[in-house]
Image 1 (cartoon, rainbow, N blue to C red):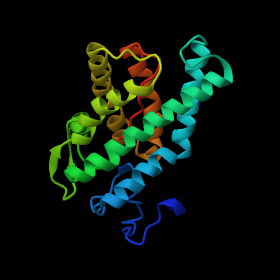
Image 2: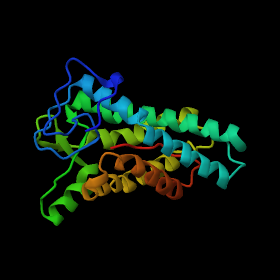
Image 3: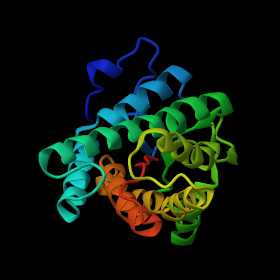
Image 4: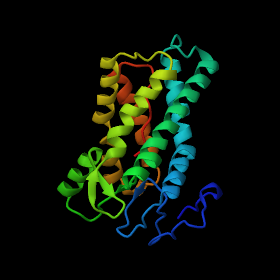
Length: 226
């Protein structure tokens, strides 16, 4: 088990359960402790600061700038740096709302709970509906307010500072719809690739960004961790 970084250690943090760290975005244990608002905040910070997440943002930005040096971010290392900065800021706002703020207010568990050992159809259905159905802190099913609200909120905030985004209502609706459409990619990969479950959410961010970019026709979209 990978140790919790010093930044995320807390005297109130629950002990690891059955060898699995409860402070991660994807968990398999049926007895994982509930996350307090403080721990949900720690999880949001961990998701943003994860080296694989930062590598994904850097790689995605490099591909975008290499494919179009005349984008609103500019060419070369300068454009790459600006796109990295905007993408990181979008990632931070998505984590703030999707992992900390909304789950804390709605008492929603922001983690994805895998169903190892269950029938394939049950696991497939569980992953596909995760965009709209999540888990309450007490383990009962509830609407996935974190995902359903974070996409439109993040898009509206991005309209205020991200260069090149069309701010029309139809464009915003298209980007949000693209986010909803590609969101199940994350749970599907997390559910069926347990051997890499610790890092899979980072690679899913990259896939979602590419798919959303194609669907929305925009130079950049907000990355989403589940």
